[in-house]
Length: 87
Image: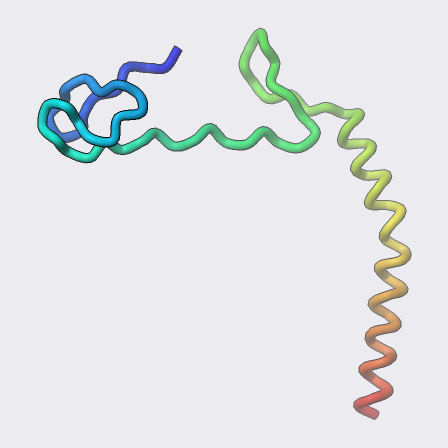
């Protein structure tokens, strides 16, 4: 359940979704959104803490490992092409 919110100007209770305070008319600031969950993890229902999912992390590392040699070759080719135009 959400914690009760109050107007920062007059301290009157404010209901969620209100843009202006019903008591004094001041603009109500919205609470910041909850941060996005980290990739490769999930929220533990018992504690509410984020838990790292080792299987998802291992899959992501495997995907990155496969693209590294191709990336290195592409960088070397670009350097050689630029060097041939300069020299």
